[in-house]
Image (cartoon, rainbow, N blue to C red; front, side, top):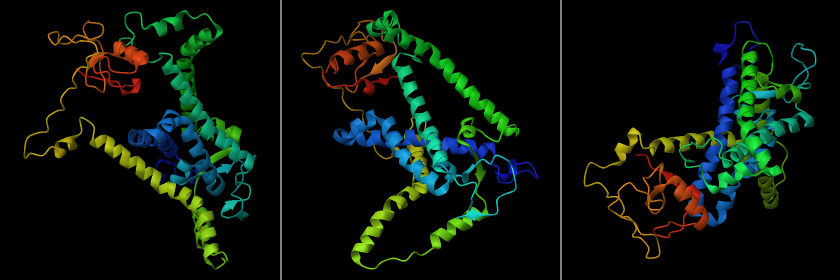
Length: 369
């Protein structure tokens, strides 16, 4: 990344490309973990379904301990340390690099408890609040295609639009103001990125000034100090119990340090699987053997005697509303309905109206015609 720095400039100042890359890595961690939990929850729903439903809280708790470890040991967040960056306490007066150093970090640059807790708040709380705000906005119908909410929308949305209570008014205000707030927030971040790119501010994020830190590249002193810590041999006691105690005390730290390699590798592997199994992937043709016939599709489940009857002569009509299917959506049973019809029926009855098999709203799948 040194190529993007001006000749003769600060060699330890990270480029905007490095900062954006480390943020993209951090943004990929949550969906990757959610994907893994969702896959295992299908096999062990009894143990993992509650964690999947509370994924934002689960992820925030895990990242609290991970980020706290990296801030205390490496003076950087997890993604910043992965890209060779560190957080430095911003001096009141810009001077030459301090000569006195403790563990490779100048005495005046090491993060104190105040900077660590402020960094934790902005690394954990801000993404969590934004994720919950987006979920709340989507639950109120924000960002949903108007075709899905046709014919005056459902009774639930009609009640929300006509609810004159304080809670109803606040929900409508939030639904109206949230997109503008989100646009303004992103514009604010973009303005700081541009100002950082043209050396108008030392902070690529506005809240770094409040924390009192800026981001720097790791230099040779940092790498030498890190190597010295790894090579340092502390006096240890012999004996089986002493060895077990030492392993138990060091195992959490070793696990957290290994995440620097394990998490990016896991993200790459998950993205590779998504590409491999995507419908448009060229790799799909490799999984189809040229020898032998193709595997036939599974047979459609027969209707339940207590379910609704379907007219096989009317192709393309919804079995529930008896009208042409709009925004075709399939249930796990394989039958196709209008999205609104299927969603409302599952919300009320929790099963397929034809086969009576249990179904959930998150199991609905859009059918591309």
